[in-house]
Length: 77
Ligand SMILES: [Zn+2]
Image (cartoon, rainbow, N blue to C red; front, top):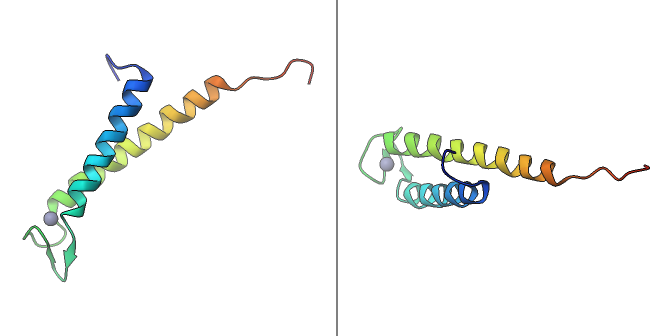
């Protein structure tokens, strides 16, 4: 995350996921072929699916860390 704030990284990761979804919409399976003309498994689908999963994973970690950072323990409880 070098150079990006936590909020900037969250926005970046969400954009990467949205972009991946747009790309994946253009790669649907039809029998043994992908709609892009490649045979299944489509190499583009595999690459983009991995990339999307990466950003979902790191986004979840960042959001979880931010939530934990905001948690407060009430004194005297
Ligand atoms: Zn494809």
